[in-house]
Image (cartoon, rainbow, N blue to C red):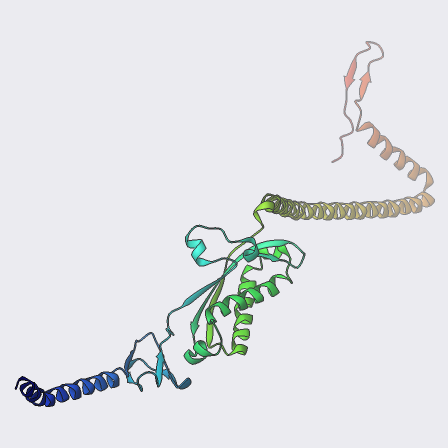
Length: 318
């Protein structure tokens, strides 16, 4: 009797169980289908793969639907955020205050010196699908490419250039060359900037480098002082030389004109002498005496008293 009652109860409850099971299955199917809904944020782009093949490479921000897993899968890399990768050091070590290892930061220059360089590369995702699937570990690929290109650029420059004038040039060259290499790999990344944060000699020889730099500055200072002295003295010497030349030319002109005047006067005197020798001799005598007596004191002496009287019977010519 009890067994019959149990069977009747089970028969009466079986439709309810079946209904509940159908409801659970429908709910599970609905949840499975709803799991295909995904959201792409404004700073992201979606990449949909179906059975391992990319079927949507650039899904724009918004709400979208895909076939639920395991048919479709979605990756959503950030494309507007600027990513950073270091060369010559590790950003984590820098934040911890740790110095980079020498094998990471030391490079050989074109003149066979060792120099420590730290480079920071900033990049963004340009092609989401290529960034995700064209290469393995694209973030570290940026580091390897930057390190290779930096080694190539430093190897053709001297240490003096690198420490003084070539910093901006090297950073720009690394940015351009690294971008070309990444494009050849199809990595889907765009380098925004490359910054040389530090470029210094090794600590062991830093004092020697500073001494050399100080000597170079002293040399530049002395050269500038010498150039300034030359710029000051040479014009003065040239002016003095021009003054002497002008004075000499004036002296020469004066002497030539004086000689020519004496020549004309002598010739005129000769002509007058041949015309009247006695008168010419008398005139010459008086002119000479006038010139001589005008330079001395002249006295008249009284023979009887011996007194002297200063006379100037010839006035001095102007």
